Length: 254
Image 1 (cartoon, helix red, strand yellow):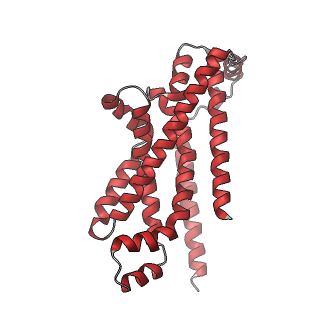
Image 2 (image 1 turned 30 degrees about the horizontal axis):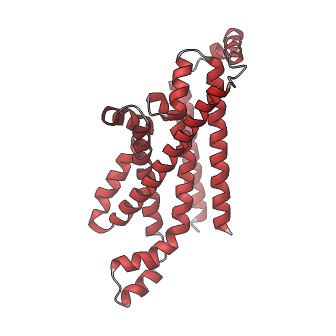
Image 3 (image 1 turned 120 degrees about the vertical axis):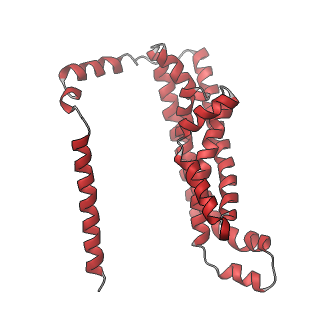
């Protein structure tokens, strides 16, 4: 009985989104003709051609290896800190504290990682500390919201059974709520790690260390061969982390 009404609502929603897209095209001054002109395409082709050949000297590759390890460490540590902080805030965001905690989580994830890194550079200085904290703060807002929603949607039966037996809140959480949520917590954390490895590779552009800092340095000096090597290292690192995360999630699903 309500299905036609729902379909109608879905149609109206799609029409509203389509109208917004059309209005966006009309509002923005998108100069497609200039972008796809022969002169522009020739300039882009010449610029891309300058990336070949990549720098493959042993000394430079050693620097790439060290910077890759720094980027990987930033993403891993930032994600772990965010998972712990997000879980604590999700547990604390119940009852009367739900509103303030949600407001805090919204504020944390509303600020992009690059902005957090730029702000933290003032206090932490150049280097990976600012990048790690920037990833941790933004990701805490994301994971805290996801963990909180997972807790709200978890079956209440096991927790209620332990409460009836006189167990306290800590035991109820450790032996009833947490075991149910652990697969989702690990899955969400691994997914955010995939995102953070990409973000960590870019955070160095503002001086937060790792491959991003090398990218900003060599690109600023128009050393295109070295820039190409840094970009290839970023792609390889992201691919390795994506593959490792996929294998971990697949192993948990068995």
